[in-house]
Image (tube, rainbow, N blue to C red; front, side):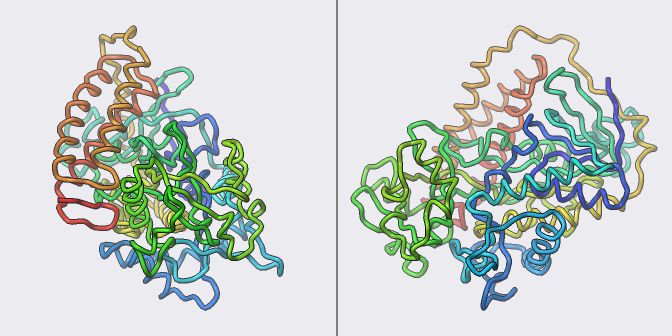
Length: 524
């Protein structure tokens, strides 16, 4: 059994985790950053197209604050929103641009080009073409790999958090407050379990998109951090608020790709199968730039009314700002062309898809959770900034602000070395069915899970659907848990175990909340 000790353990390498690692490292502490993917760039951050919010012309912190609060449909945490608004824009300029060297797109005059996205009252979204997340992630990873006191391990899948109540050989510790002491993680190559001990642990594992049949998220978004934290005793909240992006490129397969909100911000219009604009009927004020939950439901309704599997997004005939489409959206242009759609001449077939999780592990102002020693940042956390519905291009900003705060705060904690000696190594079951590794079993369980979530816990929900979802997911959870415990450990099984637990939590929270709020929409 391999045991390693660091000052700060960070699980997940998107913007929030990387920023936390960099700020924690400034204290001189030893930081261990692990990610379950082979590619260090692979995360939800990588696929963020639109941009990151700053303040634009004739803009103010109050205007931005109000836009976030309105999008959150009345349940955003005003203190958390204020924190992001006050600290975020300057961090973009001072840290991302000044220290990390992120190159955002500039206009003809040499100033940064700001775009407008849904429900923003001003043009205030800073971007790098239509590949903002990838540009940010590249520069962060370069900085991480150059840091002397950050160790970055790829291809390690976290299994469970280590706590004094669950994993200590000292029985007297159960009479004291539970503490997080690190995590067990699987080396995906060797299938050995490592015991990573740390004075502070930061979860930054991203979202839950792969729990749904249609999602803009990469395969790594399986809810791992939320699941681990819940099993360890941390409080989760707002689990019913799952945001569906209105425009994923439609294919007959389940995996399309995101068509950025910025396409509509630059003049693109949504059309039904008859070629008619329709958003004015659903949101007379905002029209195509209404909040995401409203646009997703409008598309869902138009698809039902016209008996179509998708609607169209057109920028070719609605290029009111006369932008150079191929230059402004090179990534989207190239991806669509692979599917024989020239967006300079043709409309884009789009469909709503799961995009962002507004709930997660409850955190305070420094990313601190209800479990001492554990911090959470990014999409796996719930600070309350997004309330019931996230405003476009705020997620990267929140990850930046809380990544910095958690990184600094985690480096200030007291040492827990006295507890490390009593931590048990990972216990392998005495008898394992090592032959029962049929990949079709896992595939079928995922298919059942995703179909249930899409059909019953999706864009439009009913009491009957949610009740059935709870029942079906409960049975699936029981079967998956039994399978997990009695076969050898693999990354695929860890992800399935985590995904089914989070799916159960989402369904339970959704059924208990009888009121339509934001992206939780109930039809009686």
